[in-house]
Length: 306
Image (cartoon, rainbow, N blue to C red; front, side, top):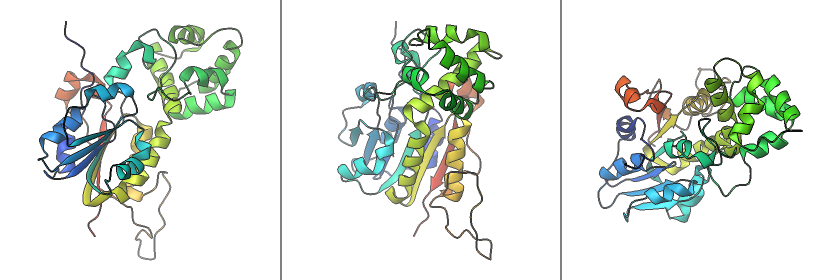
């Protein structure tokens, strides 16, 4: 029996096309994972090309090839500039971030990412950190839980869900996925699989501060990119996509309007130019081959030439 694939890279050819790879260039993969995107980039680099790859999940290190052109950084990409400078990389030609949870993480029961398996309610991408999904559901206030389920999971009855968790945890353990699902069975709205997928998404985003890390990383992209350098970001839900879209178009994260001068020009032009007006989505063939790609959205930005 063959081993399961660690992770199938999503929108692989579209990423390569979007990055406009220079053979002697320096590239950063913020989310190395199974290495699919990085290995494809390496094929386009000559002996002078280099890659810096980040992944906070210790399991990803096993996938790093023996190649002198690649540097592995076992940390969150929110520390992008710090570790690039540590490795004497001050400017790069391209940056990639695939924000999805890897198939390996979803399919490893004891990581607690999937509703399909039994295991502890964990969800840490970096297992060195202390905060777990169990800590969130066991210690957050009703108001905090309501807010995160509403904002990060768009759960229809987020207020009832938060109230029920606070009541249930007084007398029952929510430590495992089965405990958690059984305790909330009576308040599930609609399709249970979809409902818990939204609940788990919200918990995962909170545990790993995914939106905060994304914003931190994006702010470091413009100064790190060379003029005409490109950044490719793959998102998997609307919260992430909106952050990337607004940053590329306006240089800010919110949906608010940008200040303009008397001629209608932005007083502070965005640090990147959106190469893609609309997000690039997977083809029907890719979604058939890899159903987990169906919600992927790719946006590409470019630093203006000086």
